[in-house]
Length: 344
Ligand code: ASP
Image (cartoon, rainbow, N blue to C red):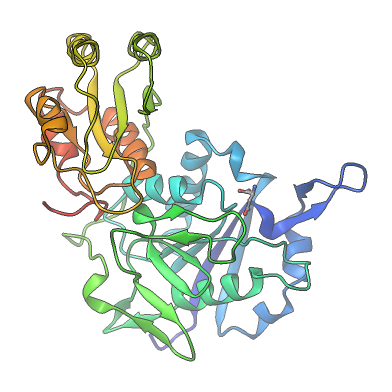
């Protein structure tokens, strides 16, 4: 690049910057300046780091679409002055935020890397320093005159993933995230190695467009043996509901009971978009592969293919917010728009 990269560090909260409350012993967020003081190594990285913090850092369990808009706005306002963005975020909902930002930031052509840690930065055994320092280094990388990473990604425990493909899979291990249906974009060992063919590239080089309309009228229902009709009915009659994401078994299978099919027909009559995603961490929905998904196919349920539930929620909120034509919703949902699902 020839000049030092300018990175904007956005602190939203999370374990990375938490300390123990003296009275309760519970972890709570602390102030950003204190966080920076604990990582003098940041001064040694060969880039210019500007930082901005949520006024009140949060545990990411309190994350919501209004905060997503805050983060997207910070990126929008700092876009021209910076070469990359690192978002410090709690791990609990990091995959949701990464998914949401991927849809909100259309024509993104710079790195947005979310990271955090399982142990606070002040802990002797912390994983925070490596995660943060490497995320900043990756955000500074250039290749052939352009940023190496041009998508919303997530860095944790030596791996960089496409953000909207990740799930949090472990509350104990430092390796807290995985991306079951898409390979890591980069691995950090002695060298930082990128898998060039897996990197997302925006389809056209246009000015970034930040979408801030998200519609929260989305529900997720995980089916289980013994689930009742009344639960289904209560959910489909929820005031204002527009999208029902159904977490089904295996390759998109569900019970074949008459009452279940009737409830789904009713839901469709009520105007709900019903999306079929799998409960399995890996693989995806193939309606019609088994008899137990035949009627779902006939009912024209939307196939979530190999999308994660986290990403399905974010995509649904985004498409509803875009006021996508009702008749086009199915075909648009089934088409990858930010690399969040496989083509077929
Ligand atoms: N509860 C924390 C959060 O998501 C966990 C973490 O940061 O790892 O904010």
